[in-house]
Image (cartoon, rainbow, N blue to C red):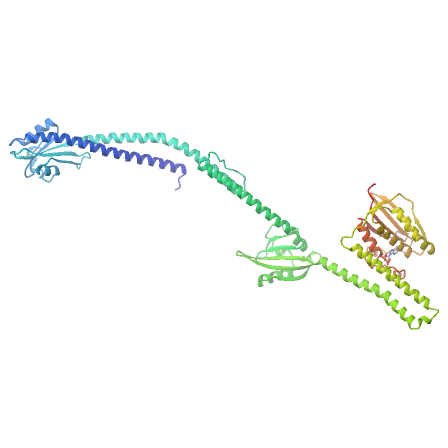
Length: 582
Ligand code: ADP
């Protein structure tokens, strides 16, 4: 059974009162008894000495004892030298024979030895007992010892009074003490209960605080509790910040990271991992990884790391997520409690794509170089092998050699332009450029060629079209588009239209050439892509012109597209943001 604090305090209080009163009563009782006994013994002694001095030689001892009793009030016993009782005030003479020998009684023994003998004895039946004093009788008498006894009846009365007083005191102490104690403990218990409530609230993550006044033990406990709550809160906040930072780093990593428990359940997974696996990020921990992504190769890798307890690595393709190529690393992590596996996926798709583009580019460039070089070498060898003497053809041979050299030069120039545009950090040198004025100049440059080819070349009238752009780059865009239009058009002509729409300047270069089949339209801006290879080469094209145009416009936040109108020909349309006024 558990008692409440208040019950325990009350019980302790009652016990203390009872113990103190009992001890006090006992002490007072002892002193009172000693005092009463002493007083009685002194009175007895006075009387017994007086009687013993006047004892007659012979008498009716019973009658004499009875007389003295009525005089003095004490019981009187007369004893001879042998200890026999000769007379007793409280016993009839005929029963004296039944009385045991008194020589062994301490007071009688002392009187027989010639001294005053004293003794107090408890009677077997009465708790208060008797006081005895015996004195040696005057010589010459049959009586040797006179003994007187007094009933210590005052002791019983005294005890009753003392007990009564003690009980009254106890009652008073309880009557006054218990309500006071109830009030005091009540206040403390209420404060302790309040602390208990605060502790429970803190345990549930609350922000309760304990009152600190008054500053006694309970108040100090409240203060310590508040200090502890503040410390725990700041520690929790620091831990939370640390966890957030870690999660932030994990969430924004370019690699996919997942931590798996021994049974293959996800303990933690970052967003990139879910992206790479082509799945939505699981809401909480506990998802079974094998269900999340069905990739036997990935499973094998994880199992191998777990079995061999060493890092397992491999490149594999994830079919579920757009056939991504990844390098997967599974690392077994063992700590005292469990063995988990850390899985990291590094995306190689982009690297693979870039690598492929680089390989294709090198192959294309080699191919583009080989054709004119073969031609150059062939014609040079022909000239050396007697061609120089062939008056009829040698000039034509040299002309071919020059054309091929020009083509190589154009290729080198375009490759250089592309390399410059693709250089990381390449920036156009921006200035306000009037695109109409620039187009006019380019039209002027191309006019002799169109006139020679019997083509019309027109710049349609329209508004001033100012852009913030790199002048040289814009010239290159215009020149490349006009060059293509003039190059591929045999009849009709070329028209340039400039305008401003929705804050963007647009330019269209239209021609009446063969047009571009719809299937090829999305690809003609790729490097070295040509619709008609032979024709492009024949016209001295490098296959890089439109790719350069696309790059330049991208650097200016613009774009280029092509369409083939129903009536035929091609329309190259590009646009870039107009320069802000002023
Ligand atoms: P090229 O140096 O071969 O002209 P471009 O990158 O400038 O290379 O153009 C790519 C291809 O697009 C050309 O080979 C050609 O087949 C096609 N093309 C470009 N402009 C025109 C046009 N105005 N009319 C028809 N075809 C064109």
